[in-house]
Image (cartoon, rainbow, N blue to C red; front, side, top):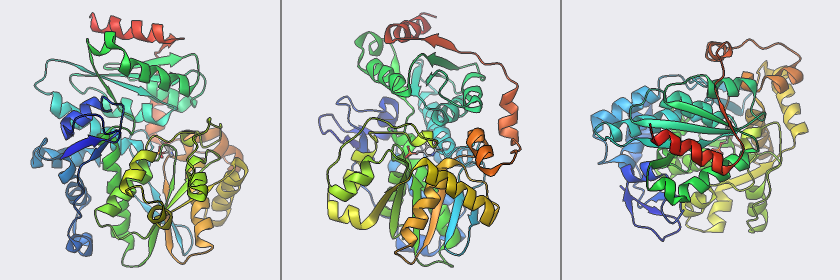
Amino acid sequence: MKYYSLNNQAPKVSFKKAVINALAPDKGLYFPEKITPLPKTFFDNIDHFSNTEIAFNSIKQFVGPDIPGDILRSIIEETLSFDFPLIGLGQNISTLELFHGPTMAFKDVGARFMARCLAYFNQNNSEEVTVLVATSGDTGAAVASGFLDIKGVNVVILYPSGKVSDIQEKQLTTLGKNISALEVKGTFDDCQAMVKTAFLDLDLINQMQLSSANSINVARWLPQMFYFMFAYKHLHKKHPNIVFSVPSGNFGNICAGMMAQQLGLPINHFIASNNENNAVAEYLKTQLYKPKPTIQTISNAMDVGKPSNFVRIQAIYKHDFSTLKENVSAYSFSDEATKTAMLEMFNDYDYVADPHGAVGYLGCQAYLKGHDAHCVFLETAHPTKFLDVVEEVSQTKQALPPQIQSVMGKKKVSTIISNYEEFKGYLLQKISF
Ligand SMILES: *Cc1c(COP(=O)(O)O)cnc(C)c1O
């Protein structure tokens, strides 16, 4: 498969090059040149396929021929080494729990897949790749865990000091080895700006191979198609009309669901569920796309004013606004509404949701008011990752799962930086070793 830049000013590249570069030289996101739907019989017979086979069939056209089939299969098996349970909340709503991986957020899937692809590409390569990642919490944790001990890959995580949860900070800063954490005196936007500046800095890019593990990277983004297919497999016999509500920030997850639909997954509708950062919801109303400054909310992983995958959604729908509007609804919810939804799920179904999942649940409720369907919302992180708000709303103490307990006692190691020059100095000193 060849990938082209959505800015159309850069050469087409292979999957391998798209993964290593992360972003095209013209700063565009990579997008597959062609999407070939899977045969209808694949979806008719999906009950007979294992998760690995479903995933392999979905992604092989996007990877081939850069990774041989048997290796791709084992990468997928290692990536999907945990469960993806579906839990019914009443007649018309189910939650798809994506938080049973090592860092307890859906980003484990993309991070584990990408790390293994890079490890394969790098096995006979003497040059190291330095993966930079700016995080508001979950991405850094998933990338740190996914890339630990991957040969030839160094990971540098930038996170805003004092603005990630205690558990997230432990997940970022306690692994050591090829994972380093930079604690930035600033905001998430400052972290992201430093990473972007580094990608344009000739002093750096002439001396080191930089990559990114944010959802702009096709190897982080595309594996997120898998679990839409898993949910379909389990529900399609019972429910002829399945729709997905996806709590969205950078819109990578929902955009992967749309790719699954392009492959032929018989899904009728997507619901983009947003907190008060609602640039896309406004766009669907007005056809005017106006990115906005970020608003801080309790579903902080979705505090994104300018979603980076919006351009990919435009590409999937071939810039046809009316098809997009037919296929996608978007809603925006306040923190108050989110807390009320968390409480409602707790009282009515004995279900403890995290704030991001609760926004997804609200999206289902809003859509089902006018439509007859079965709505699956993605539960994108384990509730104990957002312990303060979850315990406040449910008025209960939550037990910490083993994945979280195991990092709590470890010692934090981070390097504090305040500006780009310090960041650059840190990277240059790393090469000189
Ligand atoms: C990253 C994240 C999201 C948003 O996903 P996007 O792909 O950026 O839309 C939602 N919930 C949680 C818990 C996350 O970590």
